[in-house]
Amino acid sequence: MLPDLFRRKRRNRTLLPGAGNRWPKRPSMGERERDKINAASAIIILLASFGAVAPELYENAATLCDRCACVIANRTKAVHGYDLLDCSRKGLTHMIGGWPARFDTAEPEREIVLSLSGNNLTRLEQLPATNTTLVFSCRHCNLASVAGGLFLDTANVLRVDLSHNRLTGDALTAAVFRGQYVGEDSALLLQLDELDLGANAIAHLQEDAFEHIVSLRELSLARNPLGRLAGGTARALAQLVNLEHLDLSYAELTELDESVFGGMRSLHELDLRGNRLGAVPEALYPLAALHTLNLAENPIEVLSFAQPLNYLFELNVSSMPVLHTVEVDSFAHVRMLRTLLARNNTPLEVFDMTILHHLTDLRELDLSQSKLKHLHPPTGSVALAPAAYLNVLEILLLHENPWHCDCALQKVLRYIHFFSHSDYEEEDDTRCETPHLLAAMHLVDLYYIDVCDQPEEGPAGPMYEKPPFLRPGAIFLSLLSVGIVVGLGIVIGLVIVCLKRRLAAQGLGFTSAPVRYTSVRESTTSTVFQP
Image 1 (cartoon, rainbow, N blue to C red):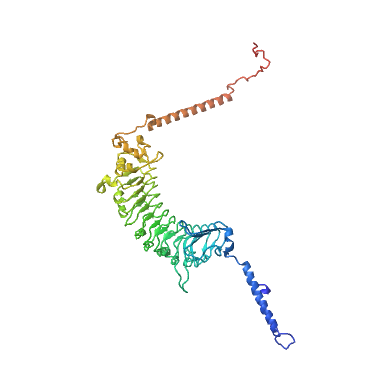
Image 2: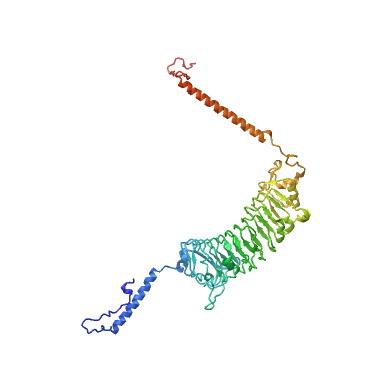
């Protein structure tokens, strides 16, 4: 209920007694003027009152440089001209209300870098207008909602980082990324180049979420609980036909709709590491321009490529907890591969080097930190002459594996010319673990000995025989003897204790006279020699 001052005055329409039931006298012209003045005053006071209690939506632009770091960098040969407004961790609770007066907001060739990261904003209001190129960051801002038309007056926004917040798919509507209006019902497409939405709470995307930023080249949805790329989420991503880099790592992905990447003819790099994919997804094969694929840390048991990826240059299949088989023939579908990272795959004990027959352009192979004991050489009809691999591999990492250095391994290392390009230090762990006589020897040193002339371990010719005291039978007899001696000692001890208690109870126990002590302080036998 507003105070009487803010209520419009009402006339008493009660009939006056004794006045012949006449209405009260109408106010004069002066009274009406006073009423208008009072009403206007009441409206002004009411608006002022609302202004005093209404919450602030923007920070005062006039004092920003007193609270934040303002840097003006003029363009040189080495530095592109930019204005930096760094308000990170300054205790801001609202969007800035404008740009500092010293900032140039009219030159498109100049750049404004704005950081509001580390502030507790909760809601992100519309950015202040500028025609310059804008780079905007609001990481760790506790954001839960974003205003529609966030970039309505910043047509040249280039990169946006909204990662590590609480944004959901419902908060990311099409209106958030809408550009400037060109008519009543149409708006310009936003020329956004990079968007980072990682580490939020996005479980799904609205189908039209990205319809105004189809020019996007880089998108990160890493560390969001996406689960499945299907339905509206898949259709939202499918609109990004100009996307070149997509990060979906650690997104709890279990399924990828086959149409999700269908229109991405420009996608070069795809990061799917840390998800729950049990096989190479079928959705990848339409990606004709894919150059880099990261499948690390997925529960894939058998690595196989069913269809060609003709321009795949780099593949990461490291740290797979259950990978035990690599389908060699399937690498015929990725013949352009130059880098293969397969480190830290502990279930993998054997690796078949026949893949080199398919990967003739392979330059780097990382098989380190696994449980590899053997390398199978290229054999049969796919075997090539050793000279064919002379200049193939430039980097071959085999360290921290329990290698069994036998004649077969030596032949493989010679076949792939491991000795010609390996440069190692003393602390390098590319060493033999078995057999005993070669333990701790570096694999490069196998070049200088003839392992094939050494007798192999086994019943026919053991290379190393343990001494008698280390044999299982001797160890068992030693433990048995110790156990018997200890047991007899305990039994004898118990028998003695029981006999002693019984003799004491019968008064026949052993006794001894008390010890008497005599002072020798006054003894004449203690004398000091006098010369």
